[in-house]
Length: 180
Image (cartoon, rainbow, N blue to C red; front, top):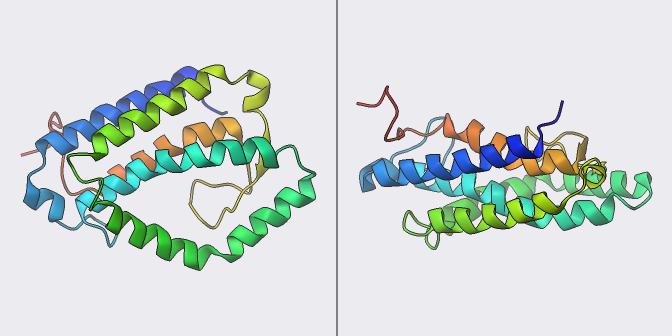
């Protein structure tokens, strides 16, 4: 079952609060430390988590257009994107590393706030019918991408992505009872 608008919006709010807590509680050394299970530092991984929300802003109009095309067109489009998985992975990795030069700890919280505000406004205006629109997706690009995804799942995706990567951080939330 797909999450409701309210659940998606609640996830957005929690992600904003969590990012703020990580950024407020982390030292410069914490942010430079390697994350667990990725090649990114904690700061690079935090930006990558923010980037998941930024990507959805680009995906939404794409889903609105491609979901109206004949299914074979969407399937061919997803196949072409899947064929480009290797270059995508390189751009995804290096892009997150480079982006922290701009969206560092001082700016990434504001970027997430603006991005989530825009996503929330769009989500509020979506009808239940539009949220059920779907298209074929490049499922090799991300473990949360499925061969076919609804617009509703696209709105939920960045929080799934955020939560997955949050477990790889080696910096803890300020209010984390397990933090020392």
